[in-house]
Length: 79
Image 1 (tube, one colour):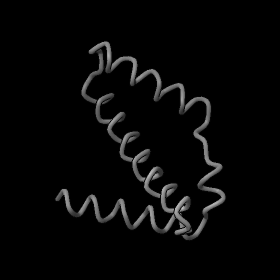
Image 2 (cartoon, one colour; image 1 turned 90 degrees about the vertical axis):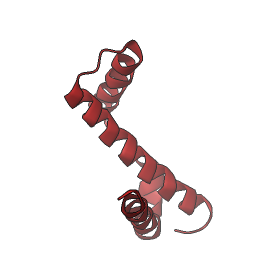
Image 3 (cartoon, helix red, strand yellow; image 1 turned 60 degrees about the horizontal axis):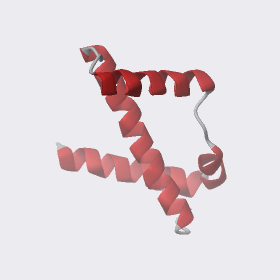
Image 4 (tube, one colour; image 1 turned 90 degrees about the horizontal axis):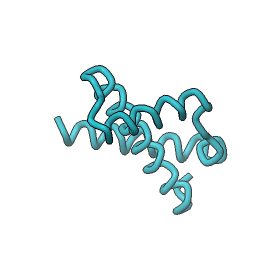
């Protein structure tokens, strides 16, 4: 399963870098999304996350990872 996840992350990153490089590089989450992420990170550091919040934060981390992969590709001329 881990290899499948890595493969789909790579495929999505490649697509984003190739199809919309300038939009990808300019993307920033909304203020409310950034605030939610910051709150979850703070709660995690404090040891106060419940199970649903931990899952939500894991989704944020996964999406952030894909965006980083894609931005690296754009920076390398892959997009």
